[in-house]
Length: 238
Image (cartoon, rainbow, N blue to C red; front, side, top):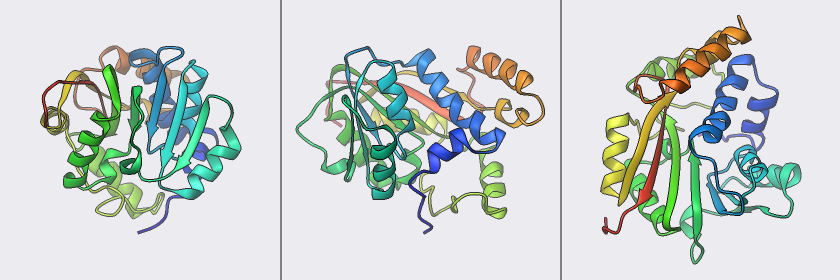
């Protein structure tokens, strides 16, 4: 399996092609619109990669812990973003215990787990969140054009190979909803984003922004390329 560079997400957001920049920026904009952390809250960025989401959550006023198993990513994040109120540690998320968070964010990470390990992950994250806290996740939508996009990315070797190497769980809104319920989470909202908007950006950034705003307004439609879900823990044991 090809190793993901430590600065991968950072470069995609700031130095990537227009589609990459738009794709990654949309995730930050979505958080600002539908799932911002409360200032002063304690937040976990699970599988934080190069730290860009952790950094923006911290800029929104949260105290943030970013966790990732990729030591190169954590090294990059510490050097680029680490400061008071924004900490990064290199370890498996399953080794994180005895601490509780108001919000947990996990962006484009759950697809990297097998279904068995994904169930284990979602149950484990429930044990890390305070009562009334919220989980925000995003993942590719295999009930959209995503399988074709993934095939193109793999065929053209534009990213480390995704199918069956990086991406082990192929989720749809229906399947993700069922998994969250199975693992003891109450689904508050589910929707999709990053439809056509990122792919128009090389031709017309203005049109891309218009499409993005329309997609955000109608985000509960389920056919776009990334799924997002907001959930809270239930009292039921999975």
